[in-house]
Image (cartoon, rainbow, N blue to C red):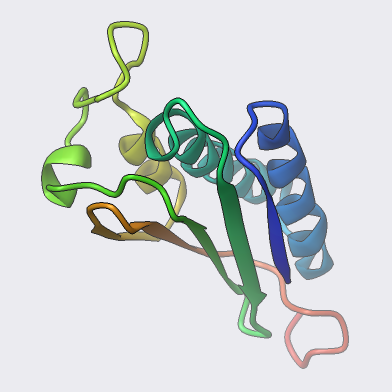
Length: 143
């Protein structure tokens, strides 16, 4: 599934719900679906708050599901990018001011099996979330 939308805060819920609806075909548990929704919400919020700061840009989401139960969600922006990805991923680090907790990447990592981030200053950032769900695609040999 591919999706793109403006980086407005109202679209964070849309992104979370759209990804959840697509992943639902794997018949995940409620907890697994909540984990994915939470991680997507954090990644999209990062795009809105940090990548595009005082402007509206486009957020791109690609979701791939596999018969094995693996889900890959890629959230990409063409915003300001990050100079130091490792620093940005440290808990409590934020460029969003005092009202931001700086826990977005930590939350994503706690709800996903794997989180990877690539970023180029001035070009944007891509966050890839990988989550394994216990159920399989309908019609698959595993159930």
